[in-house]
Length: 132
Image (cartoon, rainbow, N blue to C red; front, side):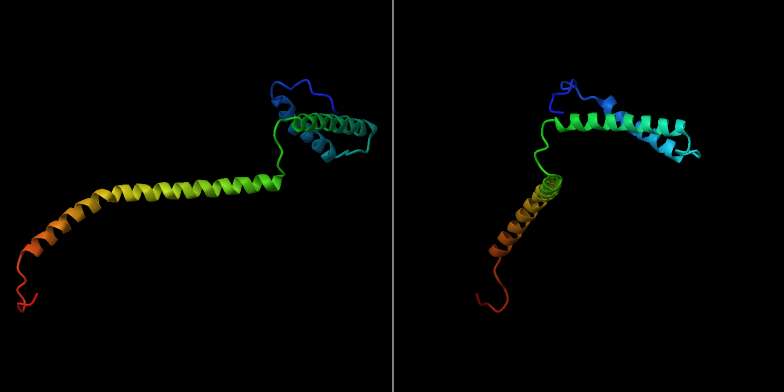
């Protein structure tokens, strides 16, 4: 199976879409009342099983020739988890930034008000006890 499949230029969705119905046929044949008791039932089950195996082998062959897949599943999970944490962290930073920007106008107004109050109180004489 080292040869390059004929579907190298486009994704053969029909190949993958056909796997589930082929498996369903195998399962239906095994669940029938006659099971594998008759030669006809045995032959039908053998044919359906071989059909499924062949389609599955083609799908595996195609999947193994896809670009990428350099990481193990555990490594991919680790990267996905790290990216999700990074995304959450960035969202929190964005929320915090938005809150700070939104409160800047309130802070600026409060600072101007408090500076005015400080300035106005600083220019009035302190009238308790005469000590400075």
